[in-house]
Image (cartoon, rainbow, N blue to C red):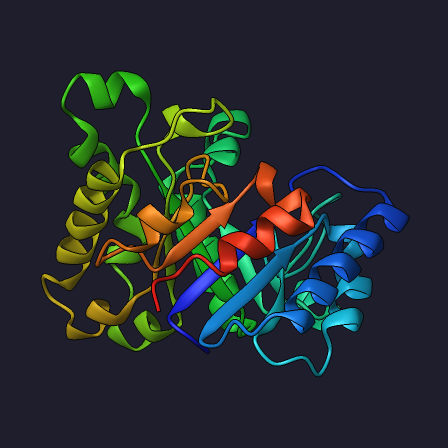
Length: 252
């Protein structure tokens, strides 16, 4: 797998036909353009994972992801989806700790630690999210906030770091149209890398993605920063042309 990644988080969008059409349009554009060295991840709602994985099967550099997984392996947990189920459906990646999950479903570090364990057990590659609120940014506590959110991954054994992806998603820039400047994003990405590298040499190679209103207009400036290795894309991932343009935005 490559260290440059563009992942599309479709969130709760697209019925079956819409999902298949969007994936098909993205694949057609990827086939028509040469984008070497970049892994493209599509993370649709659970119910579309198997179908999207089928469309991507055999295609180099394209992978299916899930938007979450249960912290349990299996059992009487109505409505939950296990990491192993996602793997069997064709997922290769799983997004964990997204700000919407932390905010709306009150996910905490203890639960996310268990979710990471389940993901690694199922051989899924986690995209672990972190990011501060506007109050934390304006109050100057943004580094401390992100450091606290990273506790589940900071405690991982070193052998798991080669399978880990981090996504920095400043909450104040998600769905607001506001975006961290390239300098602001780079500053936090460098902080995350230094924090995780403090006692593990493997952390230097962890891909760190930017995930706050990244789009085809600002991706090139963001991806030009030394510690930004791609993007976790929300709204723009629902537009095939915009999403593929983002994947083409890495410096040559």
